[in-house]
Length: 119
Image (cartoon, rainbow, N blue to C red; front, side, top):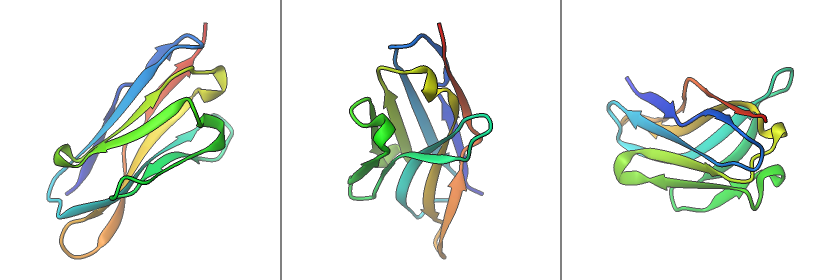
């Protein structure tokens, strides 16, 4: 069974920084794309950033220039460095990975980590 475990969320003041991590464990043959999504109260879940197996990245317009996604394939881990945080970045952040356990690729999600930006 594959599990994704997130860490790094918390409370930060506007203008501050946080780094989220998400590590996959279990029987893993290969990992395709990795991504971070977020969901604020009363809103739909939205893509924040994604990174392909080759390292190509996509960022939501709202986070361009402030957030950076990266991955460490040796550790099956994806990161999200968040700088210049704003109150509107407050949300539960979820990591997502497309993982093959040897038969097919399947979507996996982390449990979510709360990020609160407030003074």
